[in-house]
Each structure stands twice: as C-alpha cells, then as structure tokens.
Image 1: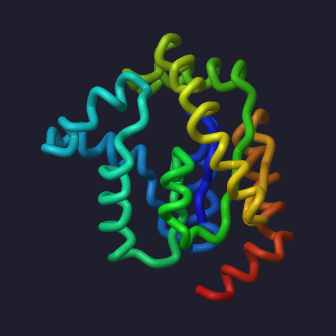
Image 2: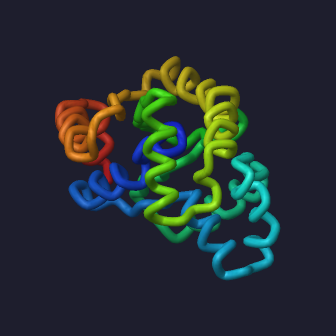
Length: 185
C-alpha cells in the first residue's frame, strides 16, 4: 500500500494511524532521506540539496533505498512514494494507493505552521510553492495511473487531522479491495 499526496497533506500522520490500526510497517521515503541527511551519511550528503530545495531525489537513489528496506519488511505502508510515473511503473507490485487530496492554500498554511514548530528548512514559501509545482507536474500523473488501474482510493485531506483520520478509517473499513489485501497478509 502507498499513500500519495502533496507535501503537507498528512501522509506521515495518516500513515501512522493506518499502520497502528492494521499492524502495518510504515516506510516513509521522505523520513528515511531526512534521517540520512541528519546522520551526515554519504547518501545524506548526496540528497541534501534536493530535499532542501524541494526537488525530487533521483529515482535510482529512492529505488535502491526502498528495495533494500522491502527485502527486510513485509506488509508495509509506503508513504510519499511513488513521486513520479517512472517510479510507479517500476514498482509494479503496488496493489493499493490512498490519495490524500488537498488544496494548495491549505498546504501552504500547514507547511508554514510546521516550519515554526519543526524548523524544517524545506518549509518556506518559495520552496513550498516549488514543491507544489513539482507535485502537480510529477506526482499527479501517478494518481491518474493508479486510478486507471482501479487501485486508487481518495480522501479529502483539507480538514483537521482527526476528521481526515475518521474519513480514512471509514473508507478503509468499507473498501473491499483493502480488506481483501489485509486478509492476504
């Protein structure tokens, strides 16, 4: 399962709720990359500029990190992936996608608030607008790709955390495909 949405849509937050309820392991590509930057690893140094400027990290790097994690983990919820159509097509084993849909104005407000709380360098107005542009150009085609494959489900992410959580949980509880996949665990 993957969770897709614009920056600041609540992918990490909703992913944690889903993982806890359904006992799934969360793999957050963004968090994995940010952790590498914090550690000052070779990989972290390689991706630091892309992360801070709001650009997508090279597909080969993301692919390598994810495949390495997936060797050790089963029954996962991947958040923030795929970010572009090539990644979606490469990872053909994805069988369920949740899209948290949000309006740009809501995203800007959330991310500016998050910047004050968490101090993330990529949460400034210039970078936020750039990240939104990258999302609409690179990631929205992924949403359409999964919609055509009939594995995409959508939730309105413009509300507060608890309301989005409630809507998401209701959707997953009633979704036959999701429930069938859970039973295959």
